[in-house]
Image 1 (tube, rainbow, N blue to C red):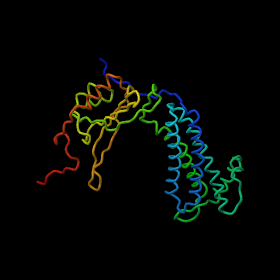
Image 2: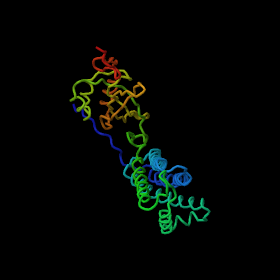
Image 3: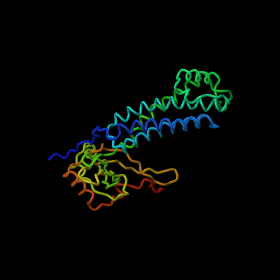
Image 4: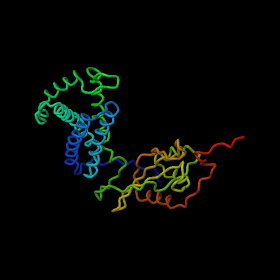
Length: 306
């Protein structure tokens, strides 16, 4: 009997994403460009604030595209990323147009927003003009101009054009789609946990999708750590499409003395057929075994003084 699992991959179908993703990309890039550019012009503090603003701008645009793809049932990540790359370029250009418009309007110079947008040559000339004179100063005094300002703008460009594609598949990651029902599966986090043993070979086998290796580990309570946390994806309609993701959970102590869990993916998302799904559910139904103090010592325990 083959106990190895197959890795889940999106089918590549576009669904409604062929329309929804480009529309969401354009709308989010343009709307958020206005918000970012005006915040940039009227922000009283430069430096770290500017970096935070551009990160929020790029990140929010990418996340908007990703959720549009998810709601449109688009399972083609290459298409989504390709659109996001173009959206990044559009966002960078649009925020410059809006920035120049707001900047010169603030200084009492009447410029046309649409006129700027359709004249990239004029935009470039105004950018060079702003670079020569600068528009903000640092604590050390004097306006930032020339090469230093070009470097700052180059960093801004890289953040925008990288963060948007990078986050454009955020809402599709670790998601499983039921092709039969044309619906995303429900994700059941922390479906059950398995205790960690001393046999590292078992972890390697589990990483490779070996169910026999998983069945050799005890089922432990939901809050036990360190442990292997099993997340289950399942279609609520047909209940036939299912997948599993295993994460390694370890406790860490915070500075205030509290503990939190850190998790790291041990396996990719594995598909489950009917027989494999039954075996996983059998693991979840086993009575949990309390981990002994010897196997899982408290994370904040300290040796007794001699």
